Length: 162
Image (cartoon, rainbow, N blue to C red; front, side):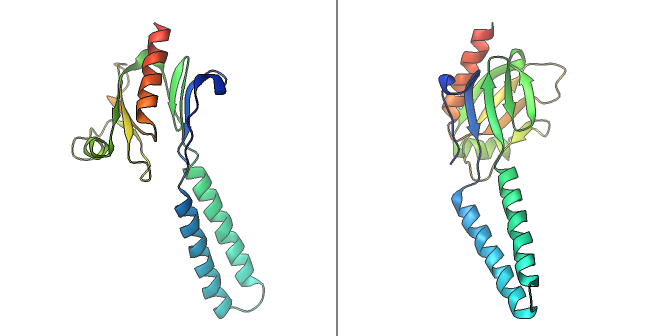
């Protein structure tokens, strides 16, 4: 569901990915809202069940859209992951991680100071070293459906800037 695009498709972006929630989350959320409707329609007469269902459906949509709107972008000047942004001059080595390595780095070998943009439905990630001495985060760990492409884009953008 997430999308990454090459340089020529986005103005100024060497890499762009949106970490959208999977379709099954929408299906499960819709079934949950239907369950709420069924429980309320049996217990309360009139338009109330429809109002409650409409509100629940609206909250579901807002929640899933906002959670799935995390973007990972590499452009000529910066690296953005969600709301966080760092200049490429402060970006060190970027390493693509598979699912097992991601679990290890996010769990047992985690550094509490690290910046994390992880999504449970994206099993792979990229570990990006931060070289800015003033930044308390030693690295960023960012979920990606295409971790090698993201690591390559970071390396290329960093090299082009030097």
